[in-house]
Image (cartoon, rainbow, N blue to C red):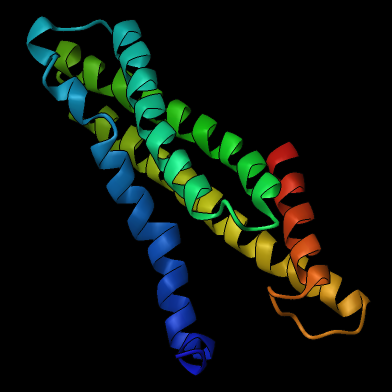
Length: 171
């Protein structure tokens, strides 16, 4: 099964799925609860706040599942640090979408919602793409410094991945 994951088409498909398909689906489902509150005609400010709460509600279980799955991983701290940035991303993109949903019901301008959803999905996709790319590049660079092939089981590769995730979070 390992040679399959070295095939360019498999890597491209996985990368595209994580950087395009997953963000679009997540950005569609995160503010789902807001649609049930639209009968109350929330203000854009209320939509922003409700969207932020929905984003936090989405980020918490996602983060807990990711961290629980990596509990035995020596890179757990780097993963936890990166998840803080991901949580903030979920809160911010859902807040913007929530504000757009509330605005649409007051103004009737559905193109604002479409543009905001596209921007939120694009920002989320960019985050995912940069996280994947920086992790792989960091591991390769550190492995190369020590004249070793990239292998996630190698300590130098792991150190490179961890440092690149920390740098990505700080930026």
